[in-house]
Image 1 (cartoon, each protein chain N blue to C red):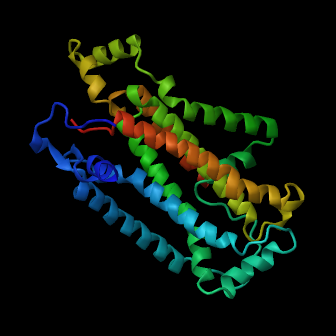
Image 2: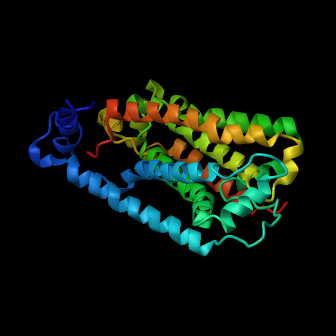
Image 3: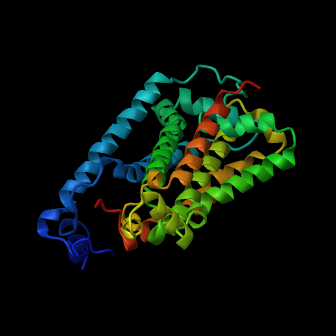
Length: 175
Length: 148
């Protein structure tokens, strides 16, 4: 059963020849998202979502936890790389006109994912150091819940839709 | 799952494993290298610095627009409107009969152009849309450099 699944989906699967390397941008966005997810889980162990302790917990992660600085920095620079990948994916789709007839809903789910990614960045930016003034307006626990659960769940949903539809209609093939 | 083998000879196909998977793995390695070099190039400051004006490059247009528009309601409605247009883009620019005929007139060929347009659908085959997209991109880039 599993063997059959692997054979039809991976080892015996045939795809059209001559696919562009730019077609990898969508996959790269997923890889970047996975990196964000992995480092984010590690940061969750130490971050304390309260207005008084947040700063100290970030300082603790980056200066006294082994390799905490690496996890922290990767989580901080990752969004820039991820949004670069997502944007280049989007521009490729836009300029090649791949959003046309059978693939309109791919564009809709992808556009929602881009917007959610930007919102994700914004909530993370509010959580990061140096933005204490915003906590009087929006409680930190609210932003934190959105950042670690609300938006990722929505993103997972849209991603599932996106991949399911790509699998169903197939990728764009060169002539 | 879509079957790519339909209507294709074996020499037009290649195996997914390992060709496509290897391609993705190579590119992912470059991504990890890029992230690690970004970590090295932008190291962590020793003290948490207070820099409320630090705006990332991809949010600069929105930020500048907010600075330019003093009316909060207008700003939010502009954001929502542009988001709606962005999300529903394929439905707005859908190929209608009128569009297809205008394309075929511009091409000066008989029908074949319109039919060909269904397969070759690059954006620059539709000059009006292409102009709209390019001018929007230029506008967004200009917004980044405006001094407020």
